[in-house]
Image (cartoon, rainbow, N blue to C red; front, side):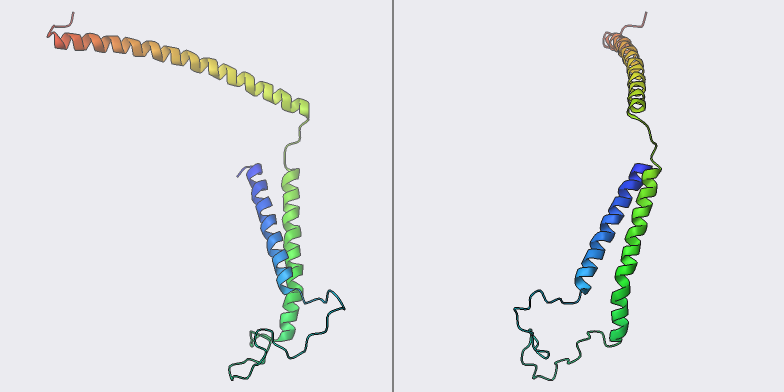
Length: 159
């Protein structure tokens, strides 16, 4: 894979890591009180089911009972660090790819463009000559074909 394709792939990787990191941070962020003007919600109130009187109500707020809440808190605390480390690593790889790009000034680029244009013109002239030769050969073949078909239609023997 050439260096430009690698750069494009790395930009996609960085974008994916950034989106996933921001999404995880938003998902796992603890609630924050924005204003002291609002009353504190009741500790046992459940907004989805204010009257949990049936036997199916789960009093445990932890949806995964096999995970200890302290382990979950450690995981939530470590996950952003790991994700940010992956993001920094991807950025460093991108920087290394940028550093590997060939450096040349504007004059060198203009000179290279002029060389490529001259090469393009030379190849274009060669292709034009080949096209003219092919047209000439096609006309000769058409003449021979027409002559052969006339001989066959007239049932003449070739000269």
